[in-house]
Image 1 (cartoon, rainbow, N blue to C red):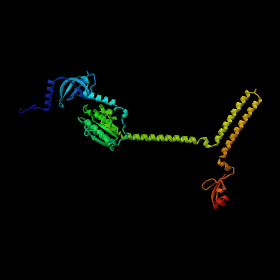
Image 2: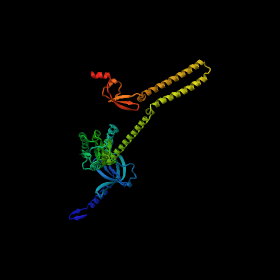
Image 3: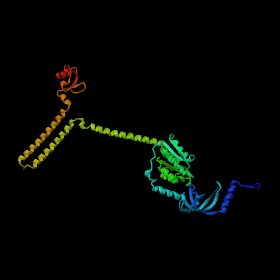
Image 4: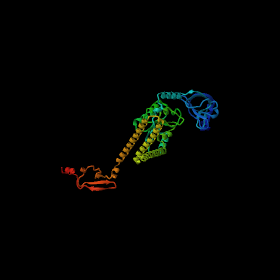
Amino acid sequence: MKTDGQRKVFSVAELTRLISGTLEREIGHVWLEGELSNVMRPSSGHYYLKIKDETSIIDGVLFRGNQRTLTFQPANGIKVRVFGEISVYERKGNYQIIIRQMEEGGKGALQERFEKLKKKLKEEGLFDADRKQPLPVLPQHVGVVTSPTGAAIRDILNVITRRFPNLHIVIVPVKVQGEGAAEEIASAIDLLNDKGGLDALIVGRGGGSLEDLWCFNEEIVARAVARSRIPVISAVGHEIDFTISDFVADVRAPTPSAAAEIVVGTKDAFQERLVALGQRLERQVRERLLRARGRFEAVAGHYVFREPANLADRYRQRIQGLGLRMNYEVSRCRRETLQRLDDVSLRMAHSVALWRQDTANRLNRVETQLRSLNPLAVIQRGYSITRDADGNVVRRAADLVTGQHVRTIVMEGEFESEVIEGSSESRKEQGA
């Protein structure tokens, strides 16, 4: 401390130490009751937190060595009673309570409001999976509802421009904490739905305390998210933070950056998916062609198509086999019935002979019909086939006229002719 005439001039460090000593001497150790907020536990193992009530807030620290008597996990929204001494953190000039003992005192007011609204909306079905809307595979137009100056919008834009720079983004700036923030967020969601033309919405902000994020726990925001016709991605705070908006939204993202990654995906992954689908389609088409070719070759190679006579041979062999079986059966029956009357044996043999003859006759008729249906067989017997210029078979001389050209097919080749003189009937028709 310096003396400047009648004035005492303190350095910042001196004044801070004076305040610290005064607080420690005048207040000392106290019991304090309030609600935990902004609870953090870094790798050091110490708890850094805030204790608040309806109007005020104070910083607190619970060092690892004083955690032996803890019977619960400190978390945001828990009401506690703590015992410790008031001190000043000289580096920042903030006063705080160094906690020596912490007891759970029930749920805080904000936590109770959170759980009450959560239960109410869940019972109404706003959290049900069957009402969730799917996100588009490759959106072209995305709306963002967040603060225009926060880290969230910067993270979202960085991710989107890096992966899909041609994506169209519509930003509606809103307050994301404090009085009136919930109303602005709900109005922005309704505004973008009325505007239309968007494939997805990102609603959220960066991290903060329970109080900072509280507007996303308000019923007005939850119902705006629920009635949105555009799929909504809730991206509020950090991964450990959960809000009512997260439960109502179609998709919950742990951070704003993750929301941007979800809404656009990755270009490489999308391209790999297209390649995989193309390969799968090509493989299926190739397999179907191979199966169709196999069936075609099997049918084309069938003996019925190779040579019709095979069908007659097959029936002939079958009839012969039946005849042999019948002879065997007849012989066996004859051996067993030697004592029967001769006329019965004669009738049996006669019937068998008639059946065989009838069967042979039917076979011959079938074979004759097959051969008679073969047009080449007719030509081989010395006949010919004559066709006119249009390829029609000439059946009557009356169908020909003088000067008409015809083509005749014989057993060993074919030749072309010109009609020198048509039939009488044809001439009469020409005269008429």
